[in-house]
Length: 357
Image: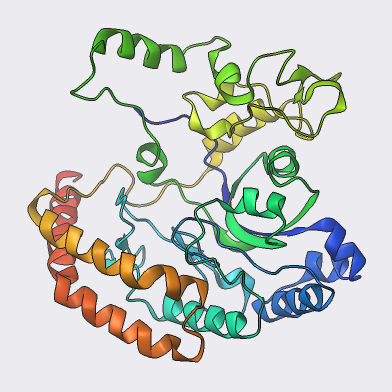
């Protein structure tokens, strides 16, 4: 069972507001239209003694967190792709021609890597981004980064300051979500076959999708100790504190729509999110999800290849050698069976499409 959360959102470029104000580039950030302009802002921040861009995930991704791709210089030309529930992120379905394609065998994706390689060489990217295990928000709070590019849903205004420890400025690219199958399969709860009390586990899962306070407790902690209600009805740290011993992300647990929004958010945010969910445009392929059973060995082999190449490519470590390493990566994927995976998933998609008529 997947989490019920806001599906309206997209790829956001996020940067510490105080740094932008200090280098006198907040207005430039708010109005930028290209990655080149963002590079100029990062360059000024680094020159002022601040750290640069950090990875958004544990795979070294600095720009274009899946399922987004940003290849051209124009921010508005970044785009979302439908990965059809592929948790490995190896494929997507092209909305234009209905063909299953490798996420990494994409000219825009390659150009994005080359851009990051150039930025890394210029000292604009966190040098340990390829191996960092902590997520971007925490790295901002730890002072190792000033900016990040990540997926944001409606309601970010309240969550980012608490997660990052700073007021953050946000600029969205053109990569806005469609509603795909992955929205319902990305995060989920299940009872493992090894569960000693499966019936109790199912009861707990049911609680996560019922109207009660368990979601808020799991997310924000114990009321009066980890959080308290602000005058506007949102949740905030107790007594003006800047942190609490327990504080989690609200998208992790069951029905997010029943949780109290964090301070800084619109008190009516949950109702707004429900309305926005009804307005999100669906992908042509919503309802279709790939089954990797027939190509499990190839999927594993390709994932091993990605584990070897992707973190360093995605964080720019290869610098001027990025394109050569990218070609090695693609050749290794082909040797590991990526084309077999594409063919199998295309067969499944074609069957699914035929069944819809």
